Image (cartoon, rainbow over all chains, first blue to last red; front, side):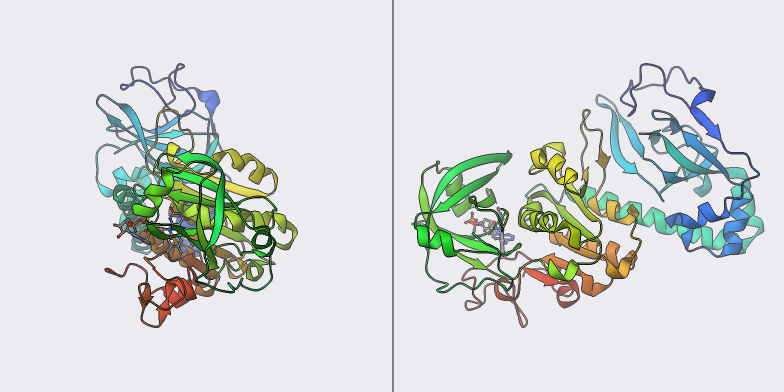
Length: 188
Length: 286
Ligand SMILES: Cc1cc2nc3c(=O)[nH]c(=O)nc-3n(C[C@H](O)[C@H](O)[C@H](O)COP(=O)(O)OP(=O)(O)OC[C@H]3O[C@@H](n4cnc5c(N)ncnc54)[C@H](O)[C@@H]3O)c2cc1C
């Protein structure tokens, strides 16, 4: 489910700590009709580019393409999110709420990145809030259909989960590098 | 100053030339660019350097420090050095004023492989003060823009206030450099990328990896992961260059301060092809 930002929210999601009004603005979300075969688009994205053709076809069968307007939320920290997203174009900010500081941007995601995997790995709530920083194209996979596909067809499930593990491990290394604070003393 | 086609050779590597500080630009906290001119007109005429080379700045009674040249190798203006306060020499330099003089030996070391990049795309990956030794390469690429494909700068900083040369980005962009920045820690006002610089490399299009060159300078951990990202994007090992700026003393391969196995960073580097240096990166105690 997509959430829209409240009117006073700026395009990059600088906003109050809580989310009192979740106003869905249909005009901001464009969904491509399911008739379009997304196999090729899925193959173009780094996350899924190395998956075999049959796996991409199976994924395309449950996927839809969306255009997310700037400022629109894809998931919210602590809340369950029912879809996994692959970013095709545009950028999404990942924000975490820190008491006393409000929303702090911890990472920016871009084309080829995967977003909102929490449900797929068994977590109840999203670990961060994802907000579109500009008009962003995503390919969305409903979690229940995706989980069912993975469980019933291991030829899809195994390679997909492997790619997901790779993406999570990349994200972990990136977070560690951020933690190292490499540029604190300069580069020499 | 003029650009030369082969690596610049120093006639007498021990000879220190007197330079005068013409002006100082405060870049970010603890970092300033010193715009220098030679006291002697003949030296000014004959001095040349290649992008990536460094000088030894000598402050009498204090010591010497290796500092990369950060100006345009083909421009007639001042010889620039961007310096972060680290210890004795750089700390003392930070206390000097416009008009002061000190000694300079150089240029030393290898240079960025500008000619080898011709005919393909170029990705410059750097962080923090690592942009300083790459700025002459950026000028050179832009001066010879038609020889290269897409030229991209991926630049990471600790926070939005830690970025060097920000006033030049618009001009670079206009002249054909695709400038992408990211910060490790964002602020409310920052609307750009957040995350480590290698992530920008992970997601940028690399249409022809075999003809793409990566030039990288920054903390060694960053260079290590940049090389891994580049290899992951199918860019060949022999098209990745890093600048190793390990502790050094004589700058001419004599004292052994910067020696690792057969490699002297001062003489064989600082710019070294990744496949020749992969085993040196992240080696503790060196
Ligand atoms: C080829 C080359 C190019 C360089 N270019 C620049 C530049 O453009 N701008 C810039 O600000 N600095 C640059 N440096 C780094 C600079 O030479 C060092 O920071 C130097 O030690 C400063 O001298 P100092 O007397 O001020 O500090 P020192 O009193 O010598 O040392 C300060 C501290 O830094 C440590 N240290 C010294 N050198 C290094 C090093 N290379 N790596 C890690 N730790 C070190 C020392 O152990 C000490 O703890 C370069 C180094 C090399 C080898």
